[in-house]
Length: 172
Image (cartoon, rainbow, N blue to C red; front, top):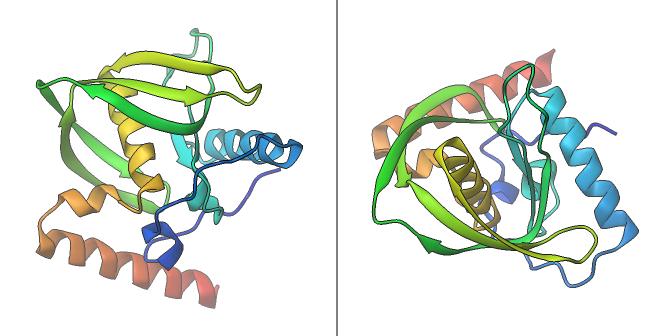
């Protein structure tokens, strides 16, 4: 089931999410709903707070090629355990900040530890778009948006656009 995506500014997007204590059927359903919502948007990552759930759960799939096999990942309680000194800059966007993009510099490679919906522990290194995406989504779990990496004027300009967008949607 597709879920509505919260649009910035929304106080839930700035909250630090609680760790998932128990993997339940409801949590697995939420993960499935989040993947459906992400693919439909379309996006390459989605964090639980973006659908109004303040739990440490993210989904991502950075496979973009039509002939490539999708690789949906569901990460429960993900954490970056190592990151490279080398950085990379990507133009980032966010489903909670539609049609706004900006260059963000992050570590080029990260190692992430997480639990999957079956309770299995994983640890994997990511680079390129995957590294950027997983860091962006984990930021959401810590109440941080990509615009928080920007200067104050640019951040305020984007926030004003989102306020206007929300007003227009409310009237429609």
